[in-house]
Length: 309
Image (cartoon, rainbow, N blue to C red; front, side, top):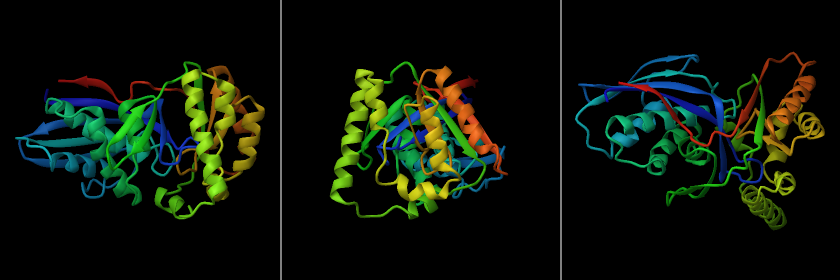
């Protein structure tokens, strides 16, 4: 194989109760990345379509993660990368993760798969570090492993998939403003009252139990963030109103997607997710602000190969 084209999907991190711990892989929205072998060693980013991003491999996260992989891997060739961005940077649905994970997934395929998907996460995290000044694995784990994922300890490369109830669907509204992850993380406090830690831990445990028992009522009661959301939500237009109307329309729960500004709602079934989308639109229709709506099932496979030769 000398060339591969992949689809690297969007993702939602945190899911309210699991800051830097939980992630889920979305369907249909994502980046298309083509990687081909070259005679000259090293990595070059030939072009980026869809967004105005640097092709400098020390700045572009796809290049950063690719070089992290190659710095630990003996290869006799180089790689040329083309990226068609389908996810806007700073949107809160894993733009940097899609590019970071996508480049290492593709290169790994081209060199005979010396690494498992789980082992690729540590390389993809270097792209996240370049994007946000924080080496977090929640998005890239979801993109590489698919489905709902859990980060137990990123320093020990300890990640695993969770059960996905078949009827779970997501609605995501993305107000077209940029909220950089590093800026959003700056408002998070380093110290948390013990009572809030207990409440957040209880929600996280109950949420995971709900996924495995497919107890939608328990899932609904657990999608709550008492630590991060109160601080970040003030950065997002009409967040509280979106949340109220989403739950009123039938959503199991609603919260900030990653670091924002996107807002996610989790529902039981696509029909309900569509109704939630209409409720979200109604909130934003009076604002002079562009937005996108995405309706998605859970993508249990993660990155997909489109073609290769």
